[in-house]
Image 1 (tube, rainbow, N blue to C red):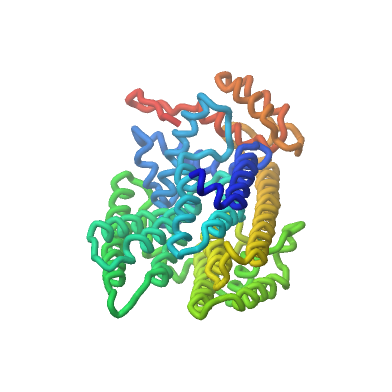
Image 2: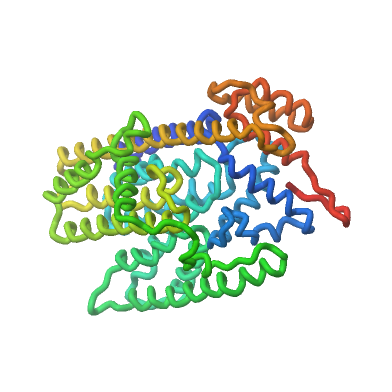
Length: 495
């Protein structure tokens, strides 16, 4: 370990500095917030809980998530379980807006796996470390941890990287191994139940393997894994989930009717939507912005293409082919994502906030491959090493700046949206009657003020008049702590 840091001093120092900055923003209450939809999901859960003896049936109430039968069984499960986990944690630690048990995977395991994935492509260690920092500073990854919402996007990102790494490391072998194939199929199946965007992995993972006339084992292993995971997904969505929802008298789960319903009223994908989506995704990562209006920057595509053309000068013939292949993957993901968004929501989102998790992965990988797979040796060419470091630091700064900018914009929009709904009864309180009319940043002292009085509902509720409006999310936790539905058999709900 000591030798590793000595040989990669610049990257290791950058990693330590960035880790400190990252955790500062992840832990500071002024930058963390909960999406208002969480309130209404939990309120709906409270309303339905009177039918059951436990919280278990609620994890199958998938139509409660947006009113549509989506494939996000594990995302909804984690949402329900997180409510219990966070309630337990907040007995011992002060309130935190975004902490989740899934951080074990999305904050700790994801960057480690992404680094190891880059190393399977023989990318320089320094470049691999810097590319991992680039991913963690991107608006796609960071938005899922500064904002608390469904864990679908952060966890689908982890399973996409895990499946990609697993395919490169264990499926891409000369010797057939049924255990590896079965484990790979399980990883793919789990990923499909987190988020729909994960399905893109089925299209691009074949491009990550090495094929030759003398080695067709990789193709056979991949095909067998697909033939295991996809039928199991079909069984889950066609038979298992509909049966469970009917058994518990939940809204019937009919995914296939929803997926292919042409009368849903949603708009079809337009080519202009794809261009708009790709442009704002790239701008969110590439160019430092002063405001959200900068997302429509006409220089973005030129900027990206110019960098690519310049780098091609250094590429070997094989590297050029790989560069175009992974640029094609990035473009195809933008197209796939645009299609999913238009089908799911009938509209597109500005930039990579929340919806750009997987884009950030391909973006960081493409830069790592561009700068780490050239015919120049990083350890011997000091000019190229300086150029590589400068580019990475610049784009890390751009990504981090844009992440904080977009996070603040969404946080204010979400807060004002709740504030303007004055007629909505939120857990027995007319919003925002209990809140102070203050837009000052939320501080640790504000959180401690409420947390210390968490055992006394009326006292803590009165204290909300002394803290900024951004602390509205703590009222949800205070309410959930004191609310209990008494069942006919005398049991109470853990929420």
